[in-house]
Image 1 (cartoon, rainbow, N blue to C red):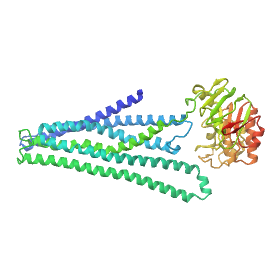
Image 2 (tube, rainbow, N blue to C red):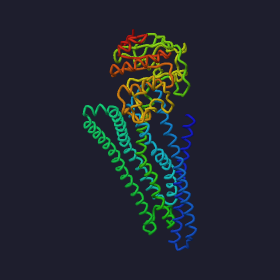
Image 3 (cartoon, rainbow, N blue to C red):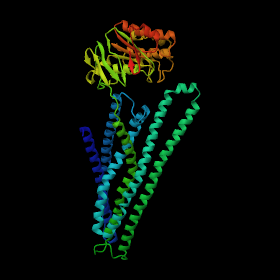
Image 4 (spheres, helix red, strand yellow):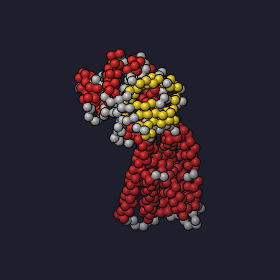
Length: 538
């Protein structure tokens, strides 16, 4: 067990212990109240001031212990949830392929929303379970000291609650799991529809999309109501058992004090003080059980979330090279591949030096983009080596290698920020970079220049202008190697020629250029060409 996890467990144990101590304080307060009223019933004088002081001290102590317990448990819950979020985020950052749990929406829902379902269980269930283990046993011993009949009633009524709770818990856990699965699927659906929002509007599919969301939301509402129905049903039955147990204790105490019952004690008449004390602590015997029953549904939800986390952990996916650390870029030197084979495709051996340029051709799905990902260290090859200046690309060298690579994806992606931020991400963008990507004229036409907010869809930019922004992003920082995936796809001839000129200018200035393309005109301008045809490469 790691040190942070061990420390979190210790904090949780301390919070549970404080919660148990807070509950035990009531036994002392009940004794003060019972003594005061017992003395009144026996005709003895009672000091109201002394009784009030004792009650204020005990209730103040209980409030302080409760407050401390909640603070400690909240700290432990924050630590545990933050640790799980960090684990998932770092795991997704290192994974080379999507998770089997679903797309980005499902993972985002698990990380941001579903993990919060652990908080009620950590704050309520574990303390309640600890109180169930301690408080009823203490009260049962006190009750048995005064009356075996009261102890028998409590001993018979108490176990019915956990038994029924376990039966209901099975159904609650299954219902919670179905509900959480619906949340993940709805999140994935939302991400997919937002990504295709423009296309959906163009083909007039907006009403059908809205209807689909409405149906998915209605299904989620049904799952949620199923969980609530189970919770209300179990709470009603548990309250019935508790009320019957307390009522039976009250009947025995009342008739014993009236002299109508002579059995149930230990041969000693029941005193008013003892009878009142038994009446006051009897509800407290059932309170931890009720608290545990209420928190049982929190635990069911938490179990469903942890089951998803377990499935995520067991999803063995290819890992990208590197440790994800920020580092200085390694200088671009010789790039070589030897015996590279991945996903059934045998790639040809390559040897590239600064200033070289290479076109990778082939049909869709042949493995062109995969080769770019292998060269960037985003995926690890199943066989063969990628050597940088004669040194194999590994976890130790991949971060510095990627820091010196410019990446131009096939589909432009933007963040909700300005054009300048979408290029440099907070760093200063050199004017030469904008000129190299031929963005100067585009910026002059925007309402606020390079401070114009683009939004996540690149609002205000044409397809060619958006592609130039991604080219400027790839050129930012002066990379030694530029990887471009279909840089001229879906562009008109003039814009494609402009992008091609910018890419070749980068190579002419000493940069190494590798392009995966279907564009025959661009490929003919490259110095080297490699054709990939699925399972074989030429």
